[in-house]
Length: 254
DNA sequence: ATGGCTACGATCCGTAGA
Image (cartoon, rainbow, N blue to C red; front, top):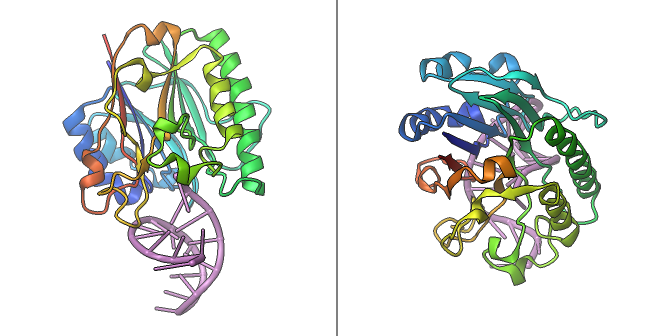
């Protein structure tokens, strides 16, 4: 079994790349973020032709999440209970005897800003929601763009980023609060090359300089973590013409 | 030196992303 997550930064623009990538990597399920598409524009037919069904929750211009999988999801929900939010950032479903949660965490813009406060409130709600999901679904995977680099080794230049949004201590504490529920960052279950990132700024040739952050993660409950055999970040799509600024994260299971 | 890319929806620049 192969699960993946990819912030495509516009599914309209990236659909050809996604279809190529699905054909090459053949994941059983992929969580997508920043689809930026209203639901009536979701490319269901193109994905069906590629062998995937999908659940999706989108909006115009911003945000938007989707889960494409080889077999349909059940018990799909696009809301966090107790946290009404017009921003389409979460989507979950039961699939193959597992609970799958796709997340696109708020960016936060700048420490101390209104959007930063929203980001921290959003993470608190996510923690509470995942706690209740875990109680009902021991086999839980949370895949997405968390917009937090959990540790300094997830940052190309920790000194330059110190205290900035994505690495600030309250954000990292919010991320650790998810791990404290009993979830593992799948990437860190294995030895990894140093300076492996999942996002690189479009500007300043950041990708060529590997000036990135690891802000896309796959979190696994204990029951899934013990079955996980690998977690990698696929840099190949970031090298294409007109790429997303994020690379896909892939987890494989025995 | 606060820039620099990209996507989007509005125009022919502003907002947002990270």
